[in-house]
Length: 230
Image (cartoon, rainbow, N blue to C red):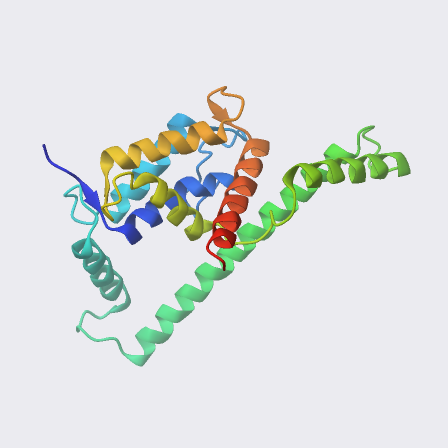
């Protein structure tokens, strides 16, 4: 039986896509494909499959050093616009400008998401729909926030999520501890991650469940760091 193995770093990057369920997106690849605010098992699996396929440059079912070299070559060829095998100063500048533009696009996208979350949060607080917050509504908001803080405890905020989340999932996926992850282990990790996030077991992960999962993962990482004496 063919054993499909992945390097630790490569698999972590793939699994980062599932950790991004905490936000409902992963760069340009949106997990919530239909934009209904819920992430289904089908959407999560499709997203992870896209990530796996994109990283497996030669399509042999294994993500390894050859794939990383192929991606480097692809990036070089894209920057080497005149195809002479070297990057001129102008080509280097163009490459940096393109990266800067992509970073700006990501910042703008994050700002849009923050604005949308703020609007949603305000709407939830404005229980009578008056367009403003009364003293009673503000009091209710602070009380609810205090209850959530008490349930979470301290240290929930922190860590960087993203790639760290992928590494956390990777360690869970590598069940035999051989520093590689088979496709079977990969799929099992996806299933376990989804089941953990889908708290009510309805087959879809809501925004609130994503938030809870994100906080839980941060807490688990913090606890492990403290256990190691860091």
